[in-house]
Image (cartoon, rainbow, N blue to C red; front, side, top):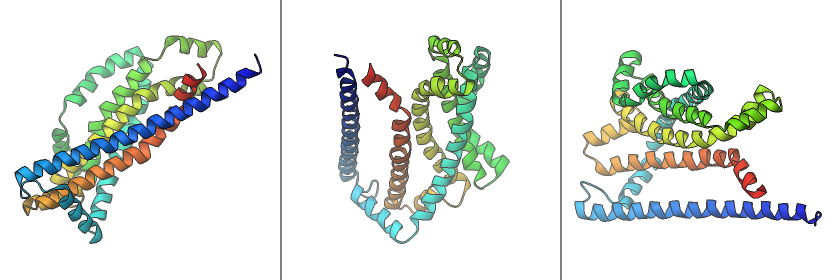
Length: 276
């Protein structure tokens, strides 16, 4: 019976990989179906309200295609994406590191709790006003507003992930005298990422909303500024086209950038489930 054990393990690994691939494809079809239902509801609502209030999806997509073909949309999308990703990257780097360090110490966690509550309770518009006073009209205002609004979400995710780590795993790592770097990469981080990725995705969505609000009030370029122009011209179709461009770029970054990284980092879960 012993020679058959490697074959059984190989079969388990293959079955687990096929199951994970099937789940991923099924979740993709579910996402497409939800988008289709949303577009159908949008089209029905637009039919009742009228094109002046809410244009149909095909009209908004046609207007977006026209903006892309004229070369007006790409620079604005690029500017907004650059600002949103800059603030998001700063919040991910600093928030993850500080949250990880705070989770390793009970004293640091208790000290950081009121500060995190203060940051979470502070509305983004208040940070935007302060950023305008500090940085003026430019890239600094939207980038800082995105960073300070997303930072507490990522900080709490990293801290909670570190605090919820099983103490027996830490003791096992100490018993085997693992180096600090190996203890961090092989014991702590695989557990913390299960808390970090939901926080990152939530912060990513928030960064796009906040950067558009900041551009609407503080800059002369970007999707937010383009929305301000279309609003002043009462051009509802152009406004919806810019919103579609914003949501489309957000979905592209989430599913083309974050989702593959998530599957790569969390591959240890599939290995653990298939080997158990």
